Length: 365
Image (cartoon, rainbow, N blue to C red; front, side, top):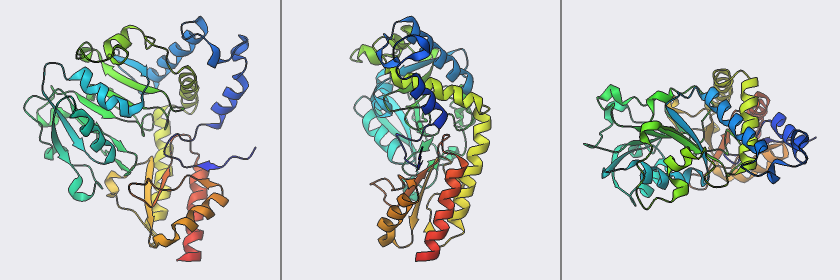
């Protein structure tokens, strides 16, 4: 079967082994006589699928016992509203670190519910870096501090984990949007109050949202918060208060098992470092291409780059597609190109892209 290399930022490439297992189980899941898409979310079959997925996710991420894992809907964009509705409590202010388009959108949404203090911003650099923690200026009593630890569009990734104890503010919960680099590298969950993201990049199909939230942050939802978005209610109902996106959760469970078979998150990080290094090295050594992100803050997952002559963009994309390299067009807000090289992108895909980059610049440079 012909398969292209899919560099889409999301919905994104899935492991072939996962797709093949899903294909084989599509009509008759493990001999039960029906598809996962037909199951009652409260039946024993799907309950087993959901419980296994949560347990495997907890194992992969090494989630401490005092954190709950929630599977929700609405994507990361919905969480931009759901988070302040749940965490604001009796406080008035929330703090945001703005490092790109997604964290900028997040803070704008939060303004509907709270006073927003921009604790730090990389706007002056064109969002090509992450402000050092020594530069962060938190407000007097924020309900939380928000970060987007990997900016999918701009290709900026935090080179450190926020640890507010280092600046004397350990009492402030850190919230992190990890949509586009979850499971790509180990994370010290205890440094965060809440981690969330959409599944459609490194976990599974669109439709599923994950939330990892510390127990003490539950039960703070404001009265107008819809019951289906109240973290306490979702947690108390094991993510089954309303019908979850069952098939997306099933695929996520298969991806978790696939990751375990690869050696887990630490093993995937080594592969991701190698893939990113190979691609950035190719871009850096060829003057035909430019990158804008400060090297220390380059994302391992999302690699934006630009041709020196943007009149060749259409030709580049057309020839790349002919070579089986798809979805390389950059986000409409920034232009250029972008290669997303998530966990499921094999090293061979990056090698093929690097070879194409070299050949294209040789012919048009």
